[in-house]
Structure formats: structure tokens, C-alpha cells
Image: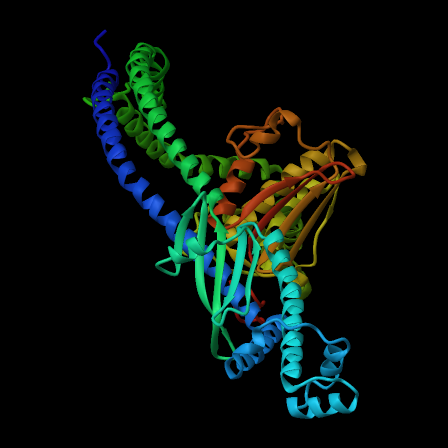
Length: 557
């Protein structure tokens, strides 16, 4: 046997794929190494930029809070008062021996001018001059400044303690009265080396500088020390991880390339037995279905042949579908033949006897007898007309069909089978919804389901019951046929709609298959349920007319 075409193609494709994979891996590794060098630089720049932005954000938030801080405002007030006093009298900054009680006296009258406080002090018995008053006021301002500076320092300590990145804060006023440092020290050397708003000062620290404005006035500078050691550690970890990934990727490609050539050889050796041979057998079976002499394999690969054989099989199945429907219709007509014969005889026998009686007496028949004779003939004609509905093939789109048009026909055809039981319960047609479908198909669906239910319920004798329901649920109608028979055998429960599947000794197995086809033609569906009390309930869901028209509309036949 020659080597299969599919096996040859896969062998060629495998060799080409291995070469292509090796070339791709080599080129990919080269590009990866080149790209990684550039990406490493971009990564460092991105982390540096992120560090600056993070430090600036921390500093801005701190500045906004400091601008409204009451302790800092009071520090600014006391520092400005001390600055004014130092400018008017430089000697006020010199230390002088304290005079007992004078500082407390000046503090109580601090809002008064210095000359007024001096005169009040003389009257109070203090032996002081105006310079003593100035020194006392200056000392009070200095003490208040230190007191508010300590409160501000405690606030800033809390910020540094609970921050993940903040390590130190320094606030320095322009006139030099306030130089507050909290957390890690920021020496003057680091401040002097700060040539821009932000700079790296080593040891994973970043120094940021911002001008401090209080009430729109540039009062000092704020220096913030930010810890970026975590980011630096992340940067190193990323570089190490990417380098390991590069080495792992190279090893992976080498392993994959070796496995490719080894496994491809194993795959080709198993291809014939596990793939090609089953495909050839399946395609051959498809070609041989319902054909005396199936065609041989065409000049193409096995998968293409399988696809073409499947298409040809679908066409043959489609051409035989209508034949199955026609065969089932004939079987259905034969099945109801006995009941129809009884019904027609009931309609024609009285008419025949009355005609013979009239011929025997040779007398003109009464008008009432003629009316009854006509009624018997009309009844027989209607039964034959209903019978012909099951043999027609519908054409055109579905139309509104009133329940009187198809339920009554199905009832007349099915009723003779229930003359000796089981009981048959019918809905009131005038209260049922209008179905969108084909009258002939609806009659055939109803007959199939009703006769199946009859056979199932007949096993229970006089206790057998078949109930018919037709109601609306939204835009759909539900036609239900329920019986109290033995139910669906588990062996065929999953194959109910397949042709030639039946649990009856003399059944054809085409009834439910045809019901499913006819329902789908009208845009509907069929499903089975098992009621809690036993038996079977078959529900056919169909499209329903939105609003039933009045008489003389869509109900015309």
C-alpha cells in the first residue's frame, strides 16, 4: 500500500515547521537581547521619573498643610516681630540679666506700646529703663516661637513616623529665626549641593526642595527627604527577573526544538493507524451508504475526501427526508383506516337504509328524511376531507390557523379509536389561541401525538386517560398531549426523535421523527415531560398570533 497523501503532507509540514521554529527562535532571541538593553534604560528612567513625581507629590501635600498650619502661622508672627525689633535696635538680641517679675508684667501688657509699658512698670515699682522693656518683649517672643516650634515639630514627627516614604523634613525661614528639622537630618552640605528642585543624595534617599509661602509671602524653604530604596530594590529585582527570563527562554526554545523533531517522528509513525486509517474507513462508509457501487478515493488527501463524502451524504439524506415523511403519512392513514371505516359506515348506513326503504315503498320521501339523508352524506364528506389533509405538503410561509380548523379535524379522525376507551378530554376550541402554521401539518402533529397517547393509556383499560390542552404563553402557543400510561422507556429516552426508534411491537418509529420535522418547519419545537403522577406529557411549542381576529378574518378556510 502506498504511503497516504495526508501522511506525506504532514511529514513535509513537520520538517518545514522545525526549520522555521529554529530560525524564529534564533531571530527572536537576538531581538529580545537588543530590546532588553533599550528597555533596561527606559526602566531606569521611568523609575527615576516616578521617584521625582512621588517626592514632588509628597512635598506638595506637605506644603498645602503647612500653609494652613496654626503653629507655623504663629511662628511666622513671632519671627516677624523679632525681626522688626532687631532691625530697629540690633542690641535687643543681646542677652541681659533677667529682672524678677518684669517678663510676666510685660507679657500681661504685651499689646501696649513699649513706652506705655515702661511708665506702668515704673509706677508698679520696677526700677527699669526702656531697653529692659524691649529685652523682655523680645524674650517673650522668642519663648513663644520655641513653644510653637515644638508643637509643629510633633506634628511633623507624626507625618514622618506613619509615612512609607517620608524620612525627613526641614523648614528654614529666610530671616533665620526658624530652622526646624524632623526625622533624618538634612545637613547644610546636602542643601548646598541641591542645584535643582530634586536630587539624589545617595543611600536610596531623594531630596526635594520647595519654597514656603505664607499668606502669599515667600517666608522660607521646605526640604523633604524621600526614601526610594523600595523602588531601587524593585528595579534590581526586575532586571534580575528579566535576565533569568531571557536565559530560560533560550533554554526553552532549545528544548522545544529538540522535542519537536523527536515527537514529530513519533507522530508520523502513529498517524497511519490512529488518523489516516479511521478517516479512510469513515469516508468509505459514507460513500457506501445507500449506494450499490460507492466511488473510490478521488485524487485528493483523506480529509478533503471525508469532507466531500459528508457533503454527498447530506444531499442523499435530504433527498430521502420527504420520502420518509410520505411513508409515515401512508402509515398514519393506514393506522386510522379502521376507525375511519367505522365512522363512515355510521354516516352512510342510515342513508343507505333510508334509500332502500324509499325504493321499496315507491313513495315520495318526506322533506325531513331528505334533510337527514343530506346531513349523513355531508358528515361522510367531511371525514374524507379531513383525511386528505394529512397527505398534503404545505407551501408558502406559515399562516394564522384557528383551532376550529385543525383541532376539530384531528378530533374527528382520532375519536373512533377511543370508542372503547381510554377517555379523551378536549379543550374548548373557541377559547384556544390562533396558531401560526400549516393546517395540514397541525392535523398530522395532533393525530400522531393523540394516537401515541391512546396506545400508552390503553394499557390501563378503563382507567386510561388522554388530555389535550392548547393555551398561549406570551408570543407562543403550547399544544400539550398528556396520558397516564407507563411513560417513556429509559432505553429510548435519548433517541425519541430519531427515525425508526419505537417501543411498540408493530410501530414504524417515524411518528415522533415526523412531528419534530413538521414542528421545526413552522418555527416550533417539541419536548417531553414526565408528570409527577406518571405517564407522559408531550408539548409542541409554536408561534402564536398576537391577537385572534374576528370571524370573517384569518379564520376563513
